Image 1 (spheres, one colour):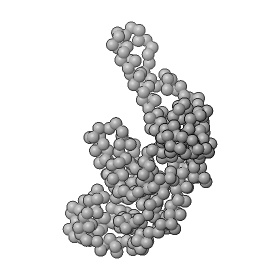
Image 2 (tube, rainbow, N blue to C red):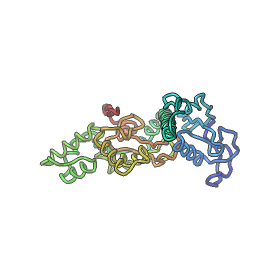
Image 3 (cartoon, helix red, strand yellow):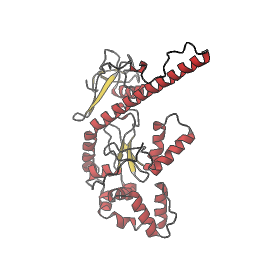
Image 4 (spheres, rainbow, N blue to C red):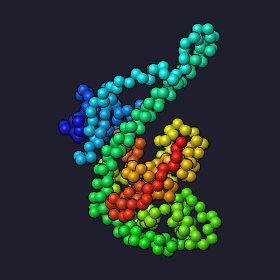
Length: 329
C-alpha cells in the first residue's frame, strides 16, 4: 500500500485540506502524508516500532526506490511478542518462601530490572533492523538523485579545485590554514611555517577528493535533495557530531555527552556514518545532513551524505579509498 494520497480530505492532525494517506489498517481517520510520516517516526522513537496514531497497530514500512515512495502495510504480530515475559536468563524466584520480606523484595526488584533491560534490548534491535532496512532500500534512489544534481546544479569551483587541490592548498595564508585546522578540531601547535600547516591540513583531510571538497565548500551553492523530499545542507564533521549526541544518548548528563564527544573526535567510537558509503564521519569531514532530521520514518535517526559521496556521485570525482570503522568492542 503506497504512501501516496488518493483523496482530498481534512487531516486529523494539522487540519489542512489535502490528499489523504491510504492507511494499512482499518482506521477511517484522514492523515496527510506529512503528518502520517511524522506520527510513524514519533512512535518509532517512543517504542521502537512504527504504529498507527489512531489504533496503535504496528505498521510495516518499506521504500520503493523505483517510485521514490514509501510503502505501508500491516505488520503481522510476531510469534515472540510475549518473549519479554519469559523467565530465561532472569533471576530465579523459586525457593524464596523462607526469605524475609526485604530479601523477597530484592529478588523481585532484580527480576524487574532484568526484564526492563531485556525489553529495551529488544526495542534497540528492532529499531536497528528497521533503520538499516530502510536506509538500504533508499540508497539507490539517493544516488540517482545526486547523479541528476550534477547536471542540474553544476559546481565549477569544485571541478576546478579537484584538478590540483594541493596547489590551491599551498597558496592559502598562514592565518587561513590555522583557522581551518582549528575549525576541524585539530591544532596548529608545533607547526613553525605555512608549509607545515598545509601538510598537516592535507594529512588531516586524507584523500584528494576530500581536500578538494574542503577547499571548494565556501563557493559551493548546490542544494542536494534528500530522498525523503527535503534538502541536504552541509555542516562540518565537528558540528554534526555535536548534533548527533542527543540522539545517541538522549538521557545522558552534560559530562557524559562531553566525554562522548571527545571519544568521537579521537575516532575511538563511530558516532556518525555516511548513509551511502558507510564511512565513519571524522571531524575533518564535511557532511550533508537532511533538514528533516529525525522527523520522518524513512530516516528516523537522521540522514547524512559525506562530501566524498556527493563529489563522486554528483560531479564524477574519484572515490577515496575506504577506511575501516573504529572498533566498538
